[in-house]
Length: 114
Length: 117
Image (tube, rainbow over all chains, first blue to last red; front, side, top):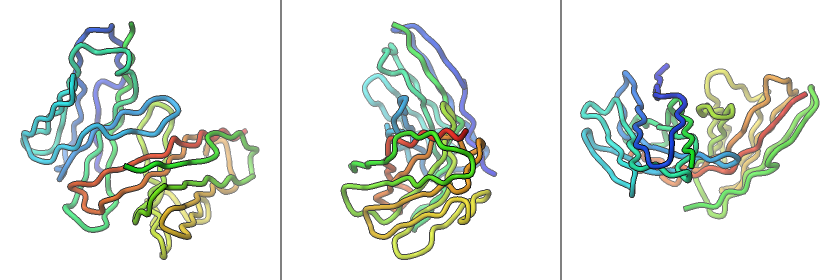
């Protein structure tokens, strides 16, 4: 069973602080996605990274795909209470066709205190 | 994007009964998925619901326990049968617009929080 391990599992920080969430695996993925989920809602896609070493920025969020496409990180600068939620990485295997093996990470629960 | 309506949003059920969860999408989609999630934890794929064919179940999930219907390209149901407290969880439906995993986007319903007494 392929696993995507996220760390930390829980994180509680003050508004304005920076943080990094890690997503690690021993498997290679064709692409990797990051989702954020708020209580009572489904996950919402934030970004997809495809190329090894790729870096994408979404306002205060910076996503990086590892060179070997086995790991990824999410860095949040100057966290806001609105960033609170469950962050999930998800790795895709395969490059086409009707595959359904999107593997979700173990999750990181972030709480940003005002 | 897609708007997904999932209902019920939550339910409390008695042991031994069954609950059917509905998922309605505002556009036609080829692939729909059903996931299970413990609060604050990761998602586990139950099955893939394809229109016109039987659902494909993941290891550990069987059709007798989680029968799925997919009568058309905008609707699916998941039934949790003969429920026990271990079935208490959040159930999420999801749709994919692109079977090509490189550019795939998943959209999720808001989930059904199920508690079994």
